[in-house]
Length: 229
Image (cartoon, rainbow, N blue to C red):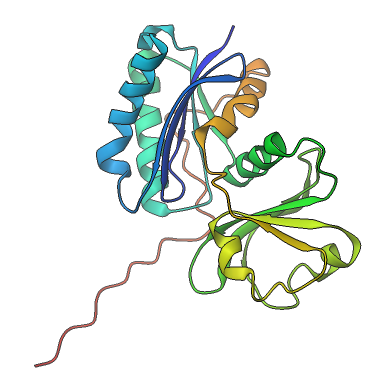
């Protein structure tokens, strides 16, 4: 039996789930800007209480590893690492875009096309990848500036569903008969449950001391323009 606490903070969704043998038994999440630092530990405590479990009952901690928000990923990974150190539990890292695609397939088990999860970056840029309905990676994770020629080969040959907060802004540009969109929340820690269980079964654990989130791009620090009198 694998009891796994799961954390997702790569986007504005702050999400915590508890799963036993790949089945989600408790979930707490909220979508809002800049709430991860204040809410994550509270959500973890609430999920543990809802499940009626103590921290010693956990077998592993899983976290969505990115790409996504630099600050959100730092908070999620740091919290997961702290729990692993304190509890002496294994650390599991799940690719965020794969988790999103898995969430879509859980809701659409008979889907036969491709899935393209998108996380909003800046302007018309997204963090993205393409998966088939077996969750196999067709296009590797990358940062893409989307225009009318993006994904044209995939769209000419396949039915493609674009998901995530990055997909919404790309709707006007990806004007193709095979392009479809699903803007539901797929950044839920509940979508990690089967993937975390698989990683646990294969003992696919990360080194807690040296693991870093998958940022994909370097953090860009900007300062506000000075006001003129």
